[in-house]
Image 1 (cartoon, helix red, strand yellow):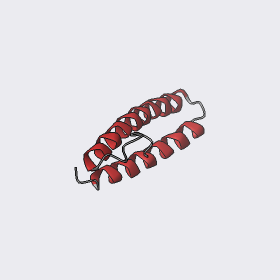
Image 2 (cartoon, helix red, strand yellow; image 1 turned 30 degrees about the vertical axis):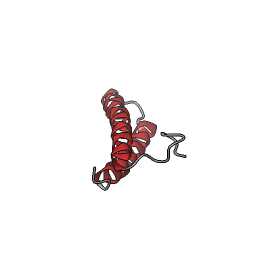
Image 3 (tube, helix red, strand yellow; image 1 turned 180 degrees about the vertical axis):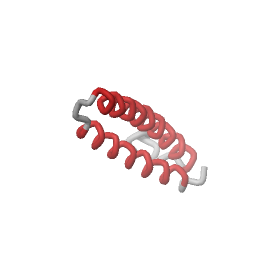
Image 4 (cartoon, one colour; image 1 turned 90 degrees about the vertical axis):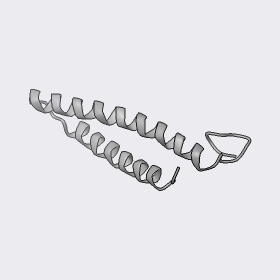
Length: 74
């Protein structure tokens, strides 16, 4: 019983690829917003350490999900 498809198993390679595409879109959006926030904070001369750390985490997650999507073969 999967988290995204309760009651009928995991759904197969195509369903997994679609779920990973959705996660990629969400992570990509928030990573882009973190880039904008970090640049704005840096230009204003305000501390951007937390924003840069959040950006690094989001980019790392984005990379891992992208690799998982690439390996699904669907």
